[in-house]
Length: 240
Image 1 (cartoon, one colour):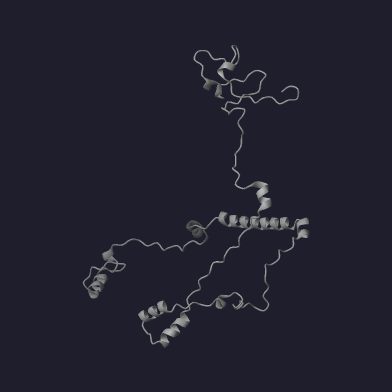
Image 2 (tube, one colour):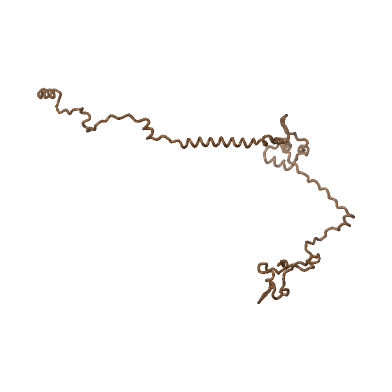
């Protein structure tokens, strides 16, 4: 850029533009694609970076050409395009089965097939007045019913200024910490075992009893070898 003017765009380099001894001089077989690859293209000293994309000529107009579909201002002044009103679609009303059933009964029809034939022969539709939104009954609502939505409550600025919510949160945290400590103490408490219970409440001492032969348990403290009680007295008197 010199003299306050705008410089020409830096177009991709071509092989004729490469001077011997320049940064992008190629030895051997040189191709134009070598000068359009930004990975191998070297920057020129004192010059801005060139564009490696192939661009059209100077006479090319960028942008999208839109074909004019109207006559422009003269046609707008001479003719005024108005929007045509849309024709409302005729709504097909539902069948009036009450009237058709009444007519079929008066005609003496009783079976389903006869009713269907009557429906096809006399297709009676409901009237528009019956489905008009002005003739419909309004919904039944309580007398003290209030329409709309409830208003948003006012922001408690006084509570915000005195940090009330912070104090409430701190109290909740203190109560939670105290509850956790109590629970931890309950878990850390030593539970009673069978040994500790026996130490506190020992079992009563059992009387020591000697072991005897099972067939001598019923005999008694002394072994009797006499046939009867008189023989025992006679032997006792003889020995004493």
